[in-house]
Length: 122
Length: 510
Image (cartoon, rainbow over all chains, first blue to last red):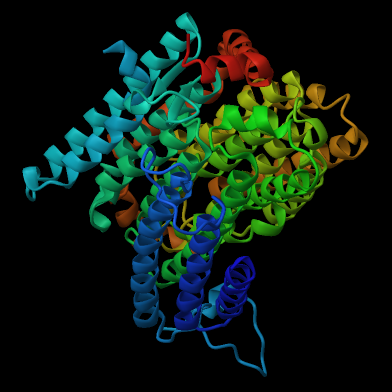
């Protein structure tokens, strides 16, 4: 179980990082979502993985650590809010800048100009 | 009532934000402004009351819901955190006052957002639980995202997108670090973690080290330390100046977290892991100072100049944190208060100067003269002397103190020349900026309609009051340098007093 769990977290992180490094906002948002899934899974495992154990004290002799579960809940809620915000921001960026590139301009391969003032297209 | 005082700097801004969000005021902007100013004044007064109480009775530990540490979440109000809370509340008051002159109408919900930001920052300063620190970071970040977009244009959207994506990745890394640390230490209370770090054995030591250094990455991102500082100049320069002035406290949250985590948890008593981040912080801080100096020289407008000054001040603070002695920490505390006030003042000044110069705005080129050269010139002179660190103002005291504090540090032969060279760079560019803006006029532009618009954009009384409060910080911090430095030394020695910290926090303040 540990191997499966660890590798799924690893695959999610690597997919997430790959997508975050893309140049369009939509893959970046997807990458952020995947990354936060991976983080939630990872955070959950910090209380150690166990089977058939309740997180409530007093109902059994063996119990799972309840704290990471609470932490994951908090992290999921915050992650949702932040994803919603970044989606809205990406849409606004698409309308304001006229394209969905993270830099607000699709780079011109011939004449690569890094001047910030020239990057914003109307 | 007084036993709940430690919680009020977090609770009051939240209530203020909620009250200002309601439709109680309808479209009546004046009553909303008055309420906002009054509420932020109350927050400031309560923070001061907490500061006095901490001075009189020692550290206050507030266990939320009566769940005592390490099981529940505690708020720890010690001299350092209460000083920063008061500073935040003051800055919030000033920004609300300044924005009441008209900036708050350029977008929606300015006042509630400012109060929510203060809630997040105060919470981050007061909390004694590292997961709670994450939560308050998120609170202040989401408020800052929205404030960044306030009254923004297209360039603003781009800067905000970068800022949001970077910070989301930062939050994810923060959670990974917390997961690693919780998995190894089994606790999230900072005092309890500090106790358990020393007991680690075998591979757990390396895991804890990974967790601790991942935290450094996160704090470096929030504080804008060198490889992760690139978001700052664009973000601060495209945000509205009043928002940028408020953001002056936000990089300090990162620095403060470093101070806490690497002095308390990974400090003197951490066994194998003691001072593990010191070398990293030291060299990255140096590089940040150098980079900030280059940025200051290259800045083409006043807002970018100030943003680069923020980077220099962050580098300086982190270098002081890396030294990890009582003297360096007390110098850092004094310098932190000074640099926050002065950079905020410079952002506001850049805004006022920009408004009075028509289309040239705050660019450092010859243009139409400002409408009120005496007022703005004197304010700029005071702020410039303070930020450069020339005698007689607070910057000079801070600079001498921090040079003295780093005298015995390991690599001081790198720090001193570098810091003094960068100070020279700051002196040159601020002097050039000031003389160009106030003395070099382009005659062809004077006759145009610039004078009319300049007449309209004379400094509003609320703006003037806000600016004066900030500018007055520099002379006041000089006049009261004695009590202030004593306070800073007291706060720093408490920060470094490991056993006292642990005992006070884990016993619930008794």
